[in-house]
Length: 552
Image 1 (cartoon, rainbow, N blue to C red):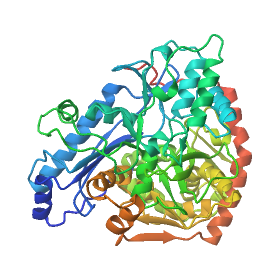
Image 2 (image 1 turned 180 degrees about the horizontal axis):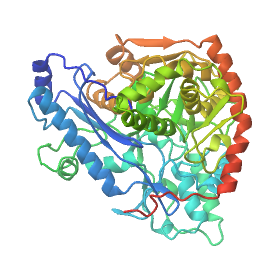
Image 3 (image 1 turned 90 degrees about the vertical axis):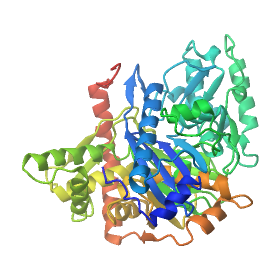
């Protein structure tokens, strides 16, 4: 959608020396639609980047990416980063001070030795409702549909033949890290989306593991296979030694043979954790919102919540502190689709046709829309949305006959639609009395200054800050975690970020505008009532099969 952040070239000779001496950190993040690599120098500022676009597919009822696509995408992304370094600084990097890998959280990768038993099931799957519900009741702790334990227990309930053969479960970040280093480990933030983590120990909750083992043992017939604790990755906190790049791992990432093995890797993390790092939101009363294919808010808690809520996941920061997560499956994809329609129109009439120019123009137009969207409603549900009880999605625009259909109102309501379900989840935190000083936004949605940020502030009723690195997102956050492994010894992650990364960072903070808040309040009331139309559309159209299903 928006243009890649123009990496600042500061003193090319000094940067070239840092690259050649390995005083850099490389962060790679496998997002839902883009794999991105960001290289940072000793001052943590980006010096080069690379990327690769990809898309999930719906295969046999599950959203997935093939492992071949994972490695092809990683290699292309890494090659693009290397080319960017060569073009900017005239040197081809063969070493880094540290490497870190992150990816979209949760999901299900089940292995027997090196063999993947079923295709990767992503966070986007909503096929685990029965398992998630039973586990939530068993634990008294919310287990979302996308968590790895929900996938695994659902496979048991469905008597899938791979279950007894399973010897290892991991996430996408954990899988890539395993192949690069040989280590079956996971950062605590990502691990907390596989199975609940006890904040007091920083390890999987022992009591809940025992309850699950008892539940499985009581099945008739009893479920064969190992205990879940024996299938899960080892948990490591940020800053821990997570292994080194093996010769085989170096060849997987860089088939040219230039990259040297032996480089240290930090614990692999999920995109939620890297978002917290990228926005300096790892201490209590801070939080961040990441807007991409999905959208989610992370709020670091001062203490436990009074009770569990289906709208909230409890996960941790990369350092192991408790976090309330409001996760929505549907983010900016539908907004991006509308942007592409207008780009095609612009090209057809001889106007600007580059995506970035059109995207910014549409966002600027949204500022002129009526505060309540002029009577329009935009539902961005391409897939199911558990927070509002949708098992499947139907993107829709709904309006009354007396609504004001203008470009400004259309685009304002599309942006409101990105934030609507999130705002419903944030209300639960407010009812729990959770205090938030400032929420920080990051991701490409915030690159057009002052637009999404302003509307998000209205949607959540809290100040929203956006920093200069907001558009770099999780790959930059992962690079910072690599730097923390290299030079953060003896300091907490929060103290390291405050002193070394964000001490002089410029952050633009927007407070909620009263007119926008009133307009969004009207909008969300209509939106909530109109969800009946979404449910009716799902019922009327039946189950939808993706045109990509079983393709390729």
